Amino acid sequence: MSDHPHIPSARSRGMLACTRCGAVWSIEAEGEKCGRCGHTLHSRDTKSVQKVWAWWFAGVMAYIPANLEPMLKTRTLVMESEATIVEGAFELIHHGDIPVALIILIASVGIPVAKFAAIAYLAFSVTRQAKMSSHRRQHLYELVEYIGRWSMIDVFVVAILSALVQLNAAAQISPGPAALTFALSVIFTMLSAQSFDSRMIWDTDTAPTDPSKKEAPLERH
Amino acid sequence: MPHSQQSGYIVCPHCDALYVQHTPEFGERAVCTRCRTVLIAPRKNAFIRILALSVTNLILVIAALFLPFLQISRAGFHNETSVMDAVLAFSDGPLFVLSLAVGALIVLVPMMRMILTLYVLGPMVAGRAPARGAAKAFRLFEALKPWSMAEIFVLGCGVALVKVSALAQVHLGSAFWMMGVLVLVVLLQDNMMCRWSVWNALEKRS
Image 1 (cartoon, rainbow over the protein chains, first blue to last red):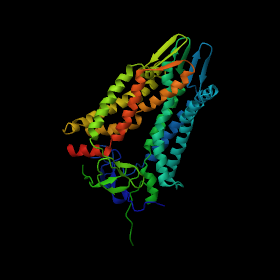
Image 2 (cartoon, chains in turn brown, purple):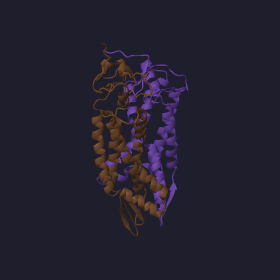
Image 3 (cartoon, each protein chain N blue to C red):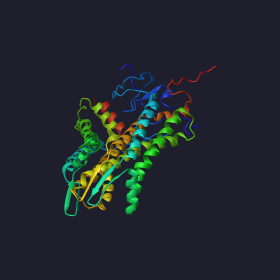
Image 4 (cartoon, chains in turn cyan, brown):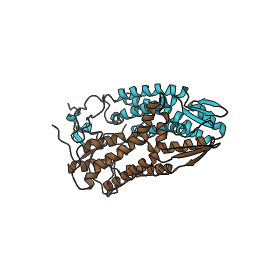
């Protein structure tokens, strides 16, 4: 089902475009270097889905210790405490800082989990029949790409806090091991999203064939 | 290159839709009708404005790096931190890799992107042919875009501020405001940058 059946894809007209600089070449240039910018040309990145899954699993694996291990170690005159991401947010709710707690919960739990789900769905949707329209999947992809970087905010907060709160005996904050695994998880997920070739979303619209095969013109009998 | 470029066409990088190219006027935009990606968005005097913003950006980053960023005090103890200190927060122990990553994301990558714009657009604004390797430099500039996280760092400061305010008194240093301005400058610059125009100019003038 296509909303714009009159728009041809470059591939169906025997052309391909460089993903970096946009130069348009004949489809025979597949696999060669772009003559304008030097980037390798692919009409579709056929290994894209594999790369997406590889980074996706790395991201999920790094995300597990990121939630189990402490993110921040706080030491004041009267107490010493370690808090994981979720514990830290609940502490804030106890203090009454509900908006900030929500920002942290959304940025470090809600967004990563939603991102994993969205990327997995997109990767599945290009190999199987998808219910969601190409438009909505394209929007989903753009959203994932845009929002992905913002998860890094938690790591920066930990960096700022541990640099700032060094008041000898009065108060001291230092980073926990989860800071590293969380950062890795965000980076892996970003790489996973970047590996996805969004042009494949639209292929099911125009051509239900395997994206690795070159599209043949309609045969006439 | 055995294959020749197919001029007169433009292809949407996101959905592979093929169009016959019409170059829009300044201030107009060419948008993919299928997935709404902006394909061409030329601005008047864009190159020189981008250059000016790059220089502004570099000055702000370098100054913000060493000036105090946030200051706190509690029970007679006092501490202030610069962006450099935040980068080095993880520097002792096994977390030092994270220090490198944070330094790259909030300082090195943004700075490098600015230097790359100077290298790519500088000669063209001066009316000369592009510098050697300008195409590679611009490709790198584009690839680094998602990894430039200065604006996320600034928002992170806001969150850190609220978290600390329960623990101690916080004052904003001059570098905080510089980073704030920096975010605006980066946004303006991204808005000005039309990658199609840059590639077109690089090709025509080399």
